[in-house]
Length: 569
Image 1 (cartoon, one colour):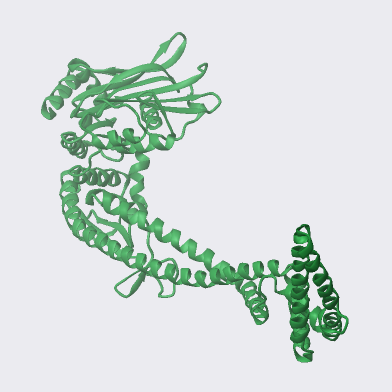
Image 2 (cartoon, rainbow, N blue to C red):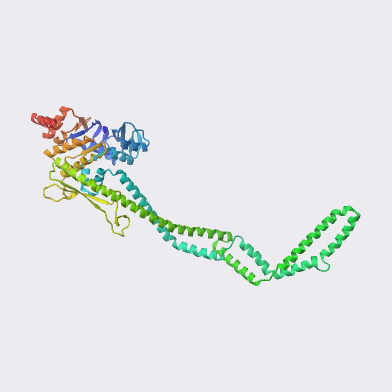
């Protein structure tokens, strides 16, 4: 419930405070006195766009502050808890707009964004001015009004979240398909290169080994001749080095037998002979192992040539070549994984589409059931509001799409376009005259009928609507007399479930108020300002009398006003 509204330096308001009460709060006043300014200032509290033009001349900034009682309103407390804003039984919202166009908003003295202010405002207040009544003229708004009655908050949140997921997956798929197309030529090249490298399959260090092997093969004859010659000279031939050294060993052994000091020399020389024997054995084995193999020589030359060609093309060394092969293998695997990911994503999109189709069908089913109840109750309310022969019909049609049309969801073998509210299109139809068939509300209803249809809808939805405050500006457009009294009675009934603020110029409506406020212009320090006065019983009689007959009050009009007030309260 709105307890207090404080406005400072807004339009022609210098400073005023209004304390509202429970039930029906009626605001009246002469045209131009500033009634619409009150609604506009409340709009600032609800997060509507600000303008420096609204700042009172001579002031530096506009301030609007509202105090709401929220003790039993968990939704608001949850929003504030998310922002880590301290809560109690009251919520104080303040909006400031300065001459530079800067706007600041606060909740319980904690700064909040304008988007968060809008979220809080949407959960606190439903403001219906002439613009909002006219929203009924746009069939795109009808589904939202029906859904308010259905209480689809959780279902619509789930549907909207799945839509986000679906559209995100579709976007991801587009990127992958684009990537697949762009990489097709590149992957084809990688596969060719992989085949070329794999045809040779060089191993680490193989080029060095081949180079060494080629040197041996190319010099095989020379190596065989030289090693054989060395073997002969060192060991096998007549007068070989080994034979000469053996004779030296014999002399050393004789000397050792005479003098023990030759022991070390004799042992070291024996080691020399052993080492010479080892070298000679190596030369013999090496010489015996050499084969002059022209086929192996040619094969080694060809392989080294193949490896060197790959090295030149892919990095300059076998290590770089092997590293490049590993790299393109990953790219090829990535391409194969890309195809798998694309197929998996297509399946997930298909699954999400089916889930959305089922959810949308469930929403549609519930809407159709609720629509019957709304139709019946709106007709009853319209009769009470003076539209005695009203027929009201809610038509719900699926948004069918072509089978090959993209961006749709499936259900029952058909494809449907969708919005965040499902795949239904909803439109209100009405007939207000006997014998007439129903036609689109947007094309047939007059201004007064539009206001009463909105009030009838709000009266129906009040049973489920949890908004604490409803504001009606110009609900009396196009009506008068007995119809106005019925509208007033409907507002009074609605105020049993919500706090109502109604701005009116009709005495029949004003007389139903639990609290009555008069908006007037006064002169203050040489300037015109708007003032708001809460009326007592006598003040209400005078104000209602003015609404009935103008400024010239007579005892008759005063008595008529008393009678009207007594009748309606």
